[in-house]
Length: 109
Ligand SMILES: Nc1nc2c(c(=O)[nH]1)N=C([C@H](O)[C@H](O)COP(=O)(O)OP(=O)(O)OP(=O)(O)O)CN2
Image 1: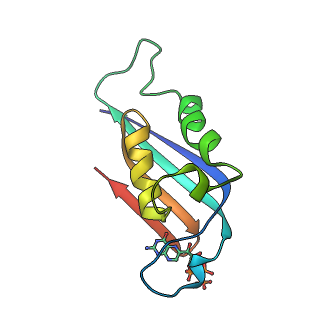
Image 2: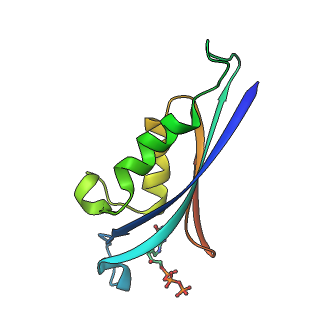
């Protein structure tokens, strides 16, 4: 099995829709550190699992310098973003979405 990891730093804002009162319901920003994990039993004709640049285009170009509430049709929690990445990037089986040093969500198939 071949594995690749791509780490991106993305500046983006969001506000969370929650069932309880929270400061996170107010618009605020993070410098997200996102790690995307892909794997494949075989390499493509270019000798890759997936091109790192293609991963960046799919995730960073969509999210960077955006209000995530404007670009996603789901509540943009770190967990939901991790799920979106796994379902968007080919061959991705896991995504780690870090809002800050202490706040990390992971989704893995
Ligand atoms: N499970 C999740 N919990 C929270 C998420 C999330 O995506 N998944 N997101 C938030 C907010 O985005 C918020 O910005 C972070 O909350 P919090 O840790 O309370 O605040 P700080 O980053 O300022 O950290 P301090 O520990 O207060 O320094 C909330 N929860």
